[in-house]
Length: 249
Image (cartoon, rainbow, N blue to C red; front, side):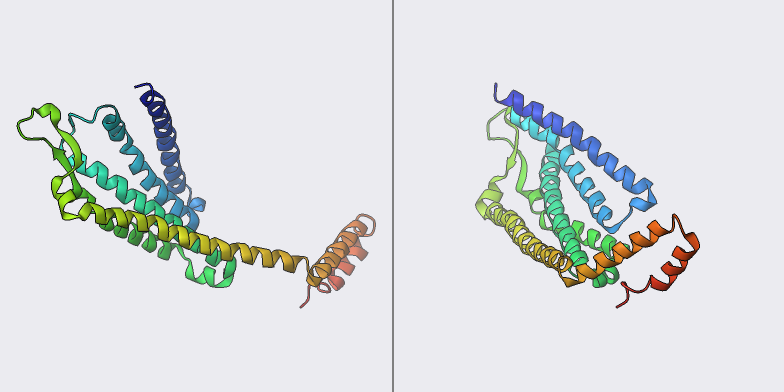
């Protein structure tokens, strides 16, 4: 019992902060036009997914304190498990898609401006939701309110059904969940490796010979601006004549 109290306190704190934070995220993105960037569209969709997961947290706490009897009915028993798994899958897919977008934006910036549009991102988000909820749909039938024979209603419990255990479907969904972890982590590791390499190369190029030309141009600009304090007409004329010098191909 003493272990359940701190766990419950932490979960309730996460519930309050998580619900408030995700609701504010969705409201801000919906309310301000400037916030509706492609990245924020992913973040807003993830906020909805996380919010649905958090709304199932009270049922998990109830099962933690009192696994039986289950008093919320068959539908909520199945729906709480289904949404928890489906939204978890959805969040994982969103993180992966967002990483792919960042990879394209950093490694192929010109192509990214053409490929990554709000319309395509919205379509991608819809596909991610559909795929996640569809792949998690077996969980809706894996659990149910079970009651042993010759027992009272007090023994009713929300848990995997005997049919799910005997058919092997529960074991199959375990491997599906494992793939949802292993494959995205592998993808993220590879993409972040490419992103890190590109940033390292960009940093090296900034330190190369071309950086000397940029620094020379910066110094000339500063000198022109400094002279303009004492000789405005001459400095402006010099600025027009020399403005293209260090910046030309």
